[in-house]
Image (cartoon, rainbow, N blue to C red; front, top):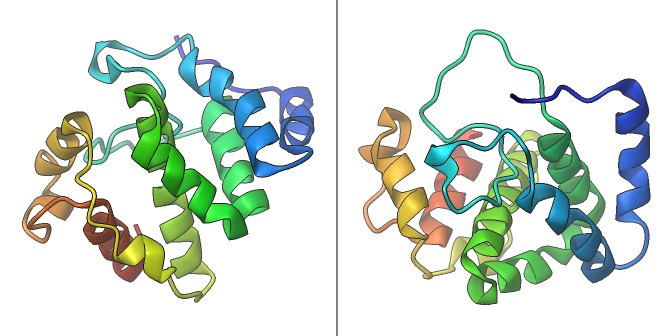
Length: 162
């Protein structure tokens, strides 16, 4: 069962983000990897985003993990290359966490009328099979994506606002 964070837990989120991006990543990653409400559709674990793309809902309250991810991106947006390296070189669950954070980053850049960094836009690394399957099942993406590279997905999210 998914736990909705208390106001006290939201207040504590900032304490995970003290120091460098690498230090914050080390504090946040266990939270993202060990979320108690993950189900079999998230078999690899490591999701920051609450739901896969394509899952529509009429009501939604952000989980602690997702709120922490959004704060992480807000705090360390300039350190996107660190997150990209975790996507490129991390273990599978880390890659999925990094993917979720990079998608938050792309949507935030759109909302703030900021450009998407060329390193992200031009990243030709294929997304993990789990992510590709989720996107192929989502009508918002499946007709527009051709190669399912990270750069293609982030560019699409940035241009369409998520």
